[in-house]
Amino acid sequence: MPKPFRFAVQASAPPADAWIERVRSYERLGYSTVFCPDHFGPQWDPTALLAAAAAVTTRLRVGSLVYDVDYRHPVIHAKGAATIQLLSGGRHEFGIGAGWMQTDYDEAGLVYDRPGVRIERLDEALQIIRSMWENERTTFSGKHYQIKNIAKAAELPAGARPRILIGGGGPRVLRLAGRYADIVGINPRLPEGKVTQNSAADLAPERLDDKLRWVREGAEAAGRRFDEIELNSLTFVVAITDDASGLRAGLAANSGMTVEQVASCPIFLTGSAAEIRDGLEKRRERYGLSYIVIQGRDQAMVEKFAELIVAPLSGK
Image 1: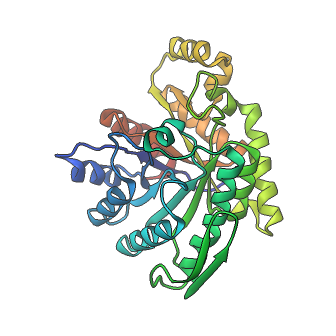
Image 2 (image 1 turned 30 degrees about the vertical axis):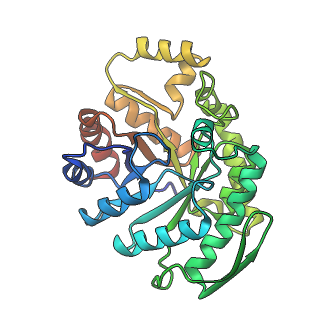
C-alpha cells in the first residue's frame, strides 16, 4: 500500500520583512513541512529558522534538510532538535547527513575528510543523539566522539522523539539510513564535493533501484521493515507548462541524460500539471517516493504548485 503524498518547501532565506507570512503561507497552501538546508553563506541558520517557524504555525512540520554532522557536535544536535520538538508540539523532522559541500568546509576552516570518515562520524553521532533523547544518561566511546555520563537532552514525552531524516546518494550512507531513519532522502551522489553537470544523472530511473536496494539492505540488517520508511525526494527544477520539450532538451544537454530520462527523473518536475501528477503517482507506485520537496525561491511557483499538484494529490 503506497504511503500518502506529502509535499514540502525548502526555504533557506525567506524575506526578512515578511518571513512570518511566508511560512504561514506554506501551511495555508497545504504543504506538510518547511525545510531549511544547512550551509554557510547568506542563508539563515536552520535551528533558529525552524524554531521561529514552529512558533508562528500550528500544523506545519519543521525540518532540517539536512544538518551537516560536522558543523555541530552531536550533543548540540541532540539538544537543539529536542528543544524544537518540544517548542513545536512534536512537529520536528530532524534531518542529518554526512556533509558534502566542500566550499563550506574550506571557508570555515574545517577538515574535509573522505566520505567514509564522515559517514563513520554520522553513525556515531546518531547513536549519541538517539540515546540522549531516550536515556537519562549517555556514555559513548567511539572513534570520533567520547561522551561521559551526559544528561538527557530534554524531557521528551515517551515515544515522542523527533523523526529522523537521513539523506544520501551512495551505498554506505543509504544503508546507514536504512538502519536509523524514519525518512530517507534519495539524493544524487556528489563525490566532487559540489553539484556538477553530471549530478542529476545519478537519479536517472535505472539508478533509483540501486539506491532503494541499499536502503532496504540497511533496514533488513537492523531488523526493520523497509515499508515503514518514508522516501523523500528533493526537486531542483519545477516547470508547470503545456510544452516542456525545449526545457527538457536543455536539461538533457546539460546533464548528460536523455530527454526521456529527464522526463522521469525525480529531480525535475516538468510538463503540464496533469503530466506532473501522473509522473509523481507512477514514481510512488514504482519506487515508493511519496514525500516531495520543492524549492521555495519563487513564491508564485510555490502557490501554483500547491493549487495544481499538492491539493489534487494530497487532498488539501
